[in-house]
Image 1 (cartoon, helix red, strand yellow):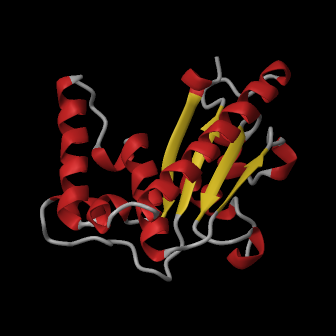
Image 2 (spheres, one colour):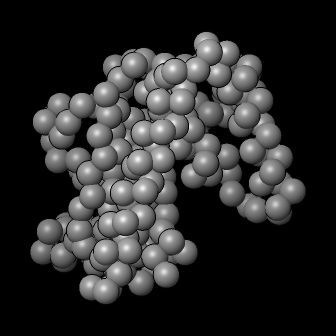
Length: 185
Protein backbone atom coordinates (compact mmCIF):
# COMPACT_ATOMS: atom_id res chain seq x y z
CA UNK A 1 0.00 0.00 0.00
CA UNK A 2 1.62 3.19 -1.27
CA UNK A 3 0.02 5.52 1.34
CA UNK A 4 1.73 3.73 4.22
CA UNK A 5 5.06 3.80 2.37
CA UNK A 6 5.11 7.55 1.73
CA UNK A 7 6.96 10.46 3.26
CA UNK A 8 6.56 14.22 3.13
CA UNK A 9 8.97 17.04 3.97
CA UNK A 10 9.51 20.72 3.35
CA UNK A 11 12.85 20.83 1.57
CA UNK A 12 13.06 24.61 1.15
CA UNK A 13 13.65 26.82 2.98
CA UNK A 14 16.24 24.57 4.56
CA UNK A 15 15.98 26.17 8.01
CA UNK A 16 12.21 25.68 8.32
CA UNK A 17 12.44 23.79 11.64
CA UNK A 18 14.19 26.73 13.32
CA UNK A 19 11.77 29.22 11.83
CA UNK A 20 8.80 27.21 13.04
CA UNK A 21 10.33 26.95 16.51
CA UNK A 22 10.83 30.73 16.59
CA UNK A 23 7.26 31.26 15.40
CA UNK A 24 5.84 28.86 17.99
CA UNK A 25 7.78 30.54 20.81
CA UNK A 26 6.58 33.98 19.72
CA UNK A 27 10.03 35.15 18.60
CA UNK A 28 8.74 35.50 15.02
CA UNK A 29 5.41 36.39 13.52
CA UNK A 30 3.61 35.30 10.40
CA UNK A 31 4.74 35.20 7.67
CA UNK A 32 8.01 33.56 8.67
CA UNK A 33 8.94 32.76 5.08
CA UNK A 34 9.73 35.76 2.86
CA UNK A 35 7.83 36.63 -0.31
CA UNK A 36 10.87 36.03 -2.54
CA UNK A 37 11.97 32.78 -0.91
CA UNK A 38 11.39 29.52 -2.71
CA UNK A 39 9.30 26.98 -0.83
CA UNK A 40 9.51 23.33 -1.85
CA UNK A 41 7.35 20.50 -0.54
CA UNK A 42 8.47 16.97 -1.31
CA UNK A 43 6.29 13.88 -1.30
CA UNK A 44 8.17 10.58 -1.60
CA UNK A 45 6.18 7.53 -2.68
CA UNK A 46 7.59 4.06 -2.07
CA UNK A 47 9.96 5.22 0.64
CA UNK A 48 10.96 1.79 1.98
CA UNK A 49 10.26 -0.56 -0.89
CA UNK A 50 10.12 1.61 -4.00
CA UNK A 51 7.12 1.81 -6.30
CA UNK A 52 6.35 -1.45 -8.07
CA UNK A 53 5.01 -1.23 -11.64
CA UNK A 54 1.52 -2.18 -10.45
CA UNK A 55 1.64 0.65 -7.86
CA UNK A 56 2.50 3.49 -10.25
CA UNK A 57 -1.17 4.30 -10.85
CA UNK A 58 -1.90 4.27 -7.12
CA UNK A 59 1.03 6.62 -6.43
CA UNK A 60 -0.01 8.94 -9.28
CA UNK A 61 -3.59 8.99 -7.96
CA UNK A 62 -2.41 9.79 -4.44
CA UNK A 63 -0.22 12.59 -5.80
CA UNK A 64 -3.13 14.01 -7.79
CA UNK A 65 -5.43 13.95 -4.74
CA UNK A 66 -2.72 15.57 -2.60
CA UNK A 67 -2.16 18.39 -5.11
CA UNK A 68 -5.93 18.84 -5.43
CA UNK A 69 -6.36 19.10 -1.66
CA UNK A 70 -3.53 21.61 -1.50
CA UNK A 71 -5.30 23.75 -4.13
CA UNK A 72 -8.47 23.65 -2.00
CA UNK A 73 -6.52 24.61 1.12
CA UNK A 74 -4.76 27.51 -0.63
CA UNK A 75 -8.06 28.79 -2.02
CA UNK A 76 -9.61 28.45 1.43
CA UNK A 77 -6.94 30.65 2.99
CA UNK A 78 -6.88 33.10 0.08
CA UNK A 79 -10.65 33.59 0.18
CA UNK A 80 -11.09 33.63 3.95
CA UNK A 81 -11.12 36.47 6.40
CA UNK A 82 -7.77 38.02 7.25
CA UNK A 83 -8.02 36.35 10.67
CA UNK A 84 -7.09 32.94 9.23
CA UNK A 85 -3.70 34.36 8.24
CA UNK A 86 -3.16 36.11 11.56
CA UNK A 87 -0.08 35.09 13.58
CA UNK A 88 -2.06 34.18 16.70
CA UNK A 89 -4.63 32.12 14.79
CA UNK A 90 -1.93 30.17 12.97
CA UNK A 91 0.14 29.72 16.15
CA UNK A 92 -2.96 28.40 17.93
CA UNK A 93 -3.62 25.96 15.09
CA UNK A 94 -0.02 24.70 15.22
CA UNK A 95 -0.15 24.37 19.00
CA UNK A 96 -3.37 22.36 18.78
CA UNK A 97 -1.70 20.02 16.28
CA UNK A 98 1.33 19.71 18.55
CA UNK A 99 -0.96 18.75 21.44
CA UNK A 100 -2.75 16.23 19.24
CA UNK A 101 0.58 14.61 18.35
CA UNK A 102 1.54 14.51 22.04
CA UNK A 103 -1.79 12.92 23.02
CA UNK A 104 -1.39 10.34 20.25
CA UNK A 105 2.09 9.73 21.71
CA UNK A 106 3.77 10.33 18.38
CA UNK A 107 7.42 11.31 18.44
CA UNK A 108 7.06 13.48 15.33
CA UNK A 109 8.34 17.02 15.53
CA UNK A 110 6.02 19.79 14.48
CA UNK A 111 8.36 20.87 11.66
CA UNK A 112 8.16 17.34 10.24
CA UNK A 113 4.40 16.89 10.56
CA UNK A 114 2.76 16.62 7.12
CA UNK A 115 -0.42 18.41 8.26
CA UNK A 116 1.56 21.41 9.56
CA UNK A 117 3.90 21.53 6.57
CA UNK A 118 0.97 21.43 4.14
CA UNK A 119 -0.76 24.17 6.09
CA UNK A 120 2.43 26.24 6.21
CA UNK A 121 2.81 26.02 2.42
CA UNK A 122 -0.86 26.87 1.81
CA UNK A 123 -0.79 29.78 4.26
CA UNK A 124 2.29 31.41 2.76
CA UNK A 125 1.17 30.94 -0.85
CA UNK A 126 -2.25 32.41 0.01
CA UNK A 127 -0.76 35.26 2.07
CA UNK A 128 1.52 36.37 -0.78
CA UNK A 129 -1.06 35.51 -3.48
CA UNK A 130 1.59 33.41 -5.23
CA UNK A 131 1.24 30.99 -8.07
CA UNK A 132 2.30 27.42 -7.43
CA UNK A 133 2.79 24.14 -9.24
CA UNK A 134 3.18 20.46 -8.48
CA UNK A 135 5.19 18.00 -10.54
CA UNK A 136 5.38 14.21 -10.28
CA UNK A 137 8.55 12.36 -11.30
CA UNK A 138 9.44 8.70 -11.54
CA UNK A 139 9.73 5.96 -10.77
CA UNK A 140 13.27 7.28 -10.80
CA UNK A 141 15.88 5.09 -12.46
CA UNK A 142 19.35 4.56 -11.04
CA UNK A 143 20.92 6.11 -14.15
CA UNK A 144 19.05 9.37 -13.42
CA UNK A 145 20.50 9.72 -9.93
CA UNK A 146 23.86 10.61 -8.47
CA UNK A 147 25.43 7.86 -6.36
CA UNK A 148 24.81 9.64 -3.05
CA UNK A 149 21.01 9.57 -3.43
CA UNK A 150 20.51 6.32 -5.35
CA UNK A 151 19.70 4.19 -2.28
CA UNK A 152 17.02 6.65 -1.13
CA UNK A 153 15.45 7.50 -4.50
CA UNK A 154 15.96 4.71 -7.05
CA UNK A 155 12.62 3.11 -7.85
CA UNK A 156 10.69 5.80 -5.97
CA UNK A 157 8.30 8.45 -7.19
CA UNK A 158 8.63 12.05 -6.04
CA UNK A 159 6.13 14.86 -6.23
CA UNK A 160 7.37 18.37 -5.56
CA UNK A 161 5.31 21.48 -4.97
CA UNK A 162 6.72 24.97 -5.37
CA UNK A 163 5.48 28.48 -4.74
CA UNK A 164 6.30 29.40 -8.32
CA UNK A 165 4.12 29.49 -11.43
CA UNK A 166 6.12 26.88 -13.33
CA UNK A 167 9.24 24.80 -13.52
CA UNK A 168 10.87 27.43 -15.75
CA UNK A 169 10.80 30.01 -12.91
CA UNK A 170 13.05 27.83 -10.75
CA UNK A 171 16.18 28.14 -12.87
CA UNK A 172 17.09 24.49 -12.33
CA UNK A 173 15.42 21.08 -12.39
CA UNK A 174 12.73 20.80 -9.68
CA UNK A 175 14.35 17.71 -8.16
CA UNK A 176 17.73 19.35 -7.45
CA UNK A 177 16.69 20.55 -3.94
CA UNK A 178 15.35 17.05 -3.25
CA UNK A 179 18.68 15.50 -4.24
CA UNK A 180 20.53 17.96 -2.00
CA UNK A 181 18.13 17.28 0.90
CA UNK A 182 18.68 13.51 0.65
CA UNK A 183 22.45 13.90 0.17
CA UNK A 184 22.66 15.89 3.40
CA UNK A 185 20.81 13.24 5.42
